[in-house]
Image 1 (cartoon, rainbow, N blue to C red):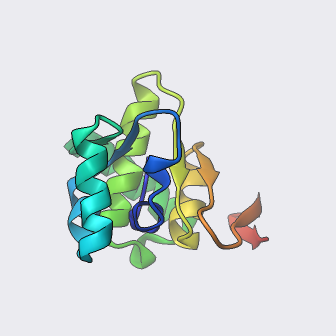
Image 2 (image 1 turned 90 degrees about the horizontal axis):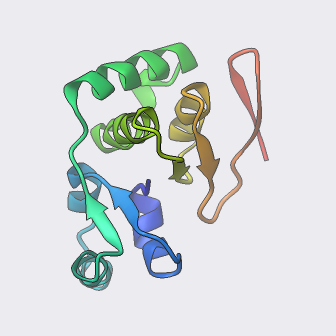
Length: 133
């Protein structure tokens, strides 16, 4: 499950598996080089663009609210969280690849694995707050 930072870093080109993102995230990538890498990845089947369900979006809003980061998440962030929850609930192992601390925190609250792209991430969760690495 890739967010915009992961796509801009072309993470999908370096992993031996199919990656997933949402239309909101895909549309955030506007520079020509990154967009070309996305189109290449999608054409080769390395990147799937999926729209999350309304039910998973409701769950994502609940987790974000519980994590105290609802106001810090963009529509694209919420779409990533929603789809990650949906895929997990369908029995898939899901890791959210992001450098966004608010998205990391909401993902951890939702019981999802988090992988950072370039920058320090959440170290552990204590009493509803993240300790950052």
